[in-house]
Length: 88
Image (cartoon, rainbow, N blue to C red):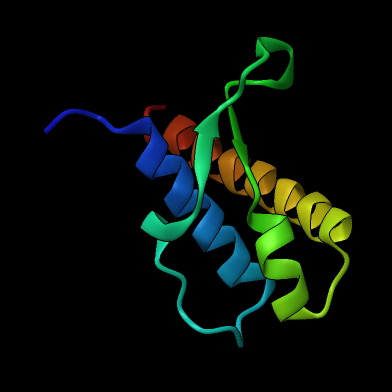
């Protein structure tokens, strides 16, 4: 099977949301909208997940987005450090 970056990112977002809001219902990662950006200056992918989920969670979309970014970055750092320590 080919490595599917889009589905990996969707799963990371779903996991991040689940970590931030442990009481929320399970999120189907495949339902998270993730699109290529029109302008490369805006990165490779964009999602409206903060806009979609904020109302349901009772938070401001911008704050949800910022929390999610922090969550994703710390998750990636942990993953990187685990790989690093596993290879030494």
